[in-house]
Image (cartoon, rainbow, N blue to C red; front, side, top):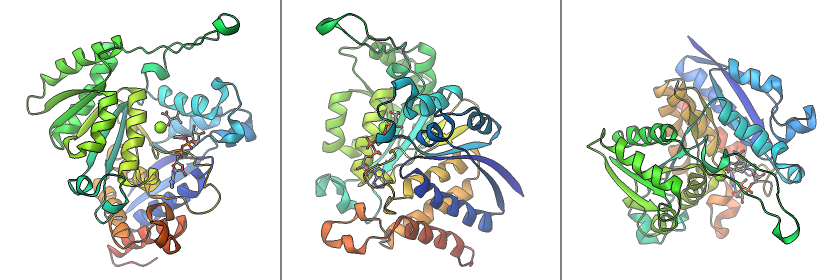
Length: 369
Ligand SMILES: NC(=O)c1ccc[n+]([C@@H]2O[C@H](COP(=O)([O-])OP(=O)(O)OC[C@H]3O[C@@H](n4cnc5c(N)ncnc54)[C@H](O)[C@@H]3O)[C@@H](O)[C@H]2O)c1
Ligand SMILES: CC(C)[C@H](C(=O)O)[C@@H](O)C(=O)O
Ligand SMILES: [Mg+2]
């Protein structure tokens, strides 16, 4: 029997609530697929600041290094918002983990699920035309990681700046990820940039064009970021794979999440060149709903599925989870944010949605919870 060591970093806000459901799902997968998971839990983020004085304690980092994969919840929240940037959970833990493991390739698949078309803010006839986009976001460079400088100057002349930088090597490897993904999907890459203004974007275009030559079957188109945000709403089914730099991918993926109906539906995989990865919802710790048992656990559960698919090569188990999620949504077992105001009294809790997904997994082999 294959046994996998998973570093589980639930984090803050809704993190522990939705992680509890992903753990249940992994347990259902153990019972049905003959796999075994050792889930090692570590503090991270604000919780780790409170418990250990730093957002990414040494024991957490070592635990991640020893694991086969990292399952991450979400971090941050108002309690830690006033810390200096370099100590905040987002920078000190999340960005450090991404950089430490060189998790440059971030996959964020977004689609409108059957039966949930009415949830999309897209116009009904446009939503009916379909939406199934894979955002490929460069995750370890760009403006997030350019040399940060302290404040300089005085008074009204005081200034701050962040530096956007990209090397050809960094652009080439993320572009390859996008073309490889497009080969398995709709054979189209839309590269998002701001090449009418930014030097980094000019280089981005040049290198992307070079990479495209190795993939003659894949159509490459370029689009400016501002236009991309608009066309996503106007002609969403024109997109297949969207290749984005770090900041543009952050913004585009939140827009894609909302087109599907909820931030709570968007999973993500962040992988390096060896296939090692960290898997986490694209959304955050959602302080506005934390502690109420109403967060949607699906993004976290689908992130566990991406972990099985992309890092552990357990395709059958991943398919089983994805299928169980589809069935649960089709059954109308939905958290409140997926329901219109007049139907909100029918909302299920985080835990009820997790249970329903487990039930579908177990019943696939005739077991019951
Ligand atoms: N990967 C991460 O850990 C991560 C990602 C994004 C933001 N953050 C952090 O999270 C904190 C809150 O950020 P924010 O409010 O800008 O973004 P957010 O993604 O936490 O929340 C945005 C909106 O989406 C909703 N939402 C998010 N996840 C949901 C879910 N599973 N189910 C239902 N609704 C959901 C929230 O209720 C909120 O209305 C900040 O500290 C931010 O830096 C962390
Ligand atoms: C929390 C923040 C640093 C992070 C990012 O910007 O990458 C988040 O928004 C995301 O999308 O994963
Ligand atoms: Mg984001």
